[in-house]
Amino acid sequence: MTEYFDIRCGDDMDPFGRDAAPLEVFAQDIYHLLKTNKLTLLRDPDWGLGLESYLSKPLPSTLASDVESMVMRDDRAAKAKCTITPVAGKTDSYRLDLQVECDAGFLEMALSLTPSGIVRVS
Image (cartoon, rainbow, N blue to C red; front, side, top):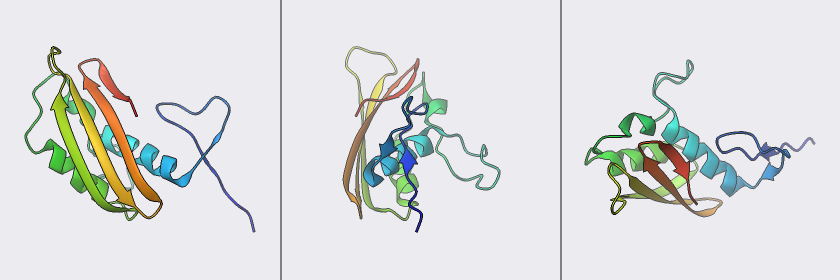
């Protein structure tokens, strides 16, 4: 039986081609789901939230629940909780904290949303 491995990738491939554990793969998938704009994948036009379209402007009050709903569309997610808080002293800068319960365990990740882009901070 052939065993397949997933490779670590955030914004780019891991330079050493290291493998990623299932929980890390799920975190990577969520990160890409949140960054990808809708209508960019031909076979799944509804996939993606397009967080980058919200940069440099006030966030809608429904964004945290939209993130939770989008994550819950994945079969691996059992529960999702998103909290978005403004960064003190920085205009249009936010921290997005996401906790997801799944079969592989409990996943926590955080994103920094600033006018210059989105960065996964944990």
